[in-house]
Length: 117
Image (cartoon, rainbow, N blue to C red; front, top):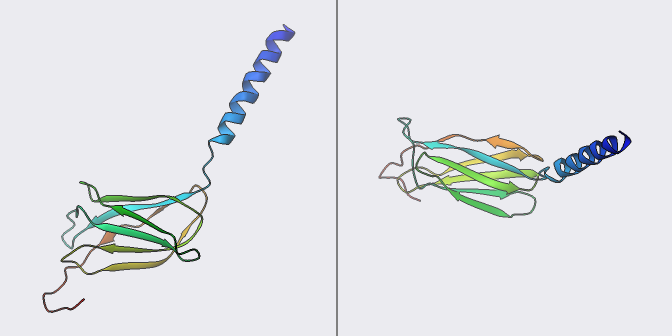
């Protein structure tokens, strides 16, 4: 009986240690990019820059218009969304914390032909 109790205790401690190792120390920014009509935009470049370290993380929207900037160290980020034919979108001050999933959905505006870059 005592041996069974020790085995159960060992298994419980092993499971607790495994759960502790699985904790994530980074966060992510994710979202969807659409056009003014609400249609998703595929192939959009999305860049997240940590304002303290200047480290950049780059992603591209998928067939659903979704993007994810994973494994971001905690801090404040500037996210830039760019696609030919659309105005550049910039969002400053996005806070990312440990195990955080910050959502930033973007509706891009059409660039007028007379605008210069």
